[in-house]
Amino acid sequence: MNKHNFGLSFEFFPPKTNEQKVILLDTQARLRKLNPDFFSVTFGAGGSTITATAETVLELKTHDTPKVIPHLSCMGGTPDEIQTLLQQYLDHGITDILALRGDVPSGMGSVGYFRYANELIEFIHEKYPDTFHVTVGCYPEVHPETESFESEIKYFKQKVDAGVDRAITQFFFNPEAYFNFLDHCEKAGIDTPITPGIMPITNFANIKRFCGFCGTDMPRWLQYKLQSFGDDRKSIQQFGTDFTIRLCEQLLEQGVPGIHFYTLNRAKATLDVVKALS
Ligand code: FAD
Image 1 (tube, helix red, strand yellow):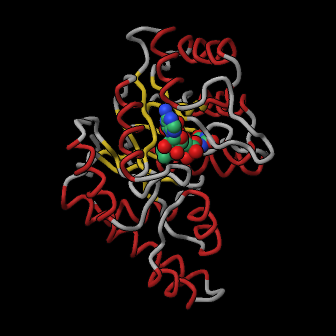
Image 2 (spheres, rainbow, N blue to C red):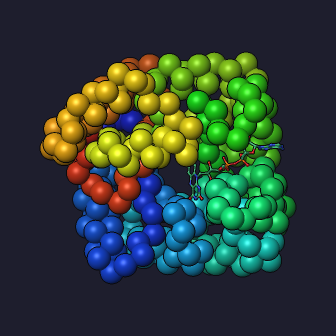
């Protein structure tokens, strides 16, 4: 636990250029000072290469703290290739994995060898019994491919039953959606801690695009408000930060296991939010 009295973690993506690498190293150095529980590094998202995750994880790990959790998706290749990657992490003392199905790249009809995250989790525990702590993703507003809310809970439970220590939600703007999801999980017998994933609003076009493919509901009033700022980026950022602070306050008031920030490799918005919550 950090001095803010709530769990904190930050997600990064592997940089693709030297310029992006410099930004990430600066970002992680600034966020490290908040004493987070862990950093996590995405896998294959946005077209990044498979080796890029491990490289970024090992680079971040050259500092003592915090723990760094690699994401690993079913797009990681054949079972042998996935096992090689797991072994590489183990050899570096990494025993936490964020296991996902991953997003199917456009044009690819099917996913990898494993179809769903629960199959990947079973594989991890089968090859390395009692070794890895597994984190998974979950979707209070329902994953775009899931046919119903009931199925969302059913498949989430299947994943949890495969052996999971923690879940992190897709980003959302409606705290009610998160708490409603928690209620249904509890009724289904899911007792894994479910940490809200929060994406600070810094850019209207980007966040609207992310909402589109993640299935996150952006309330109409919020859309109109952000739209009303036009190209005034400073006002969008100010409003976005205030909105995110209020959202986190509502979550913390009702008790959440922690907050996971989707940083997009930038420090300022997340720093402003966390400092306001302290
Ligand atoms: P799953 O839990 O496997 O679910 C995928 C879909 O299949 C859902 O619609 C589910 O309802 C359905 N389903 C599950 N099991 C079954 C079953 N047995 N039968 C029928 N249907 C089933 N993407 C990346 O590419 N890289 C990342 O690093 C990354 N990090 C993420 C981190 C977090 C915290 C979150 C929430 C998401 C992340 N994503 C990432 C996005 C994620 O990969 C996509 O949302 C993906 O489409 C679903 O992955 P999943 O592991 O949640 O899938």
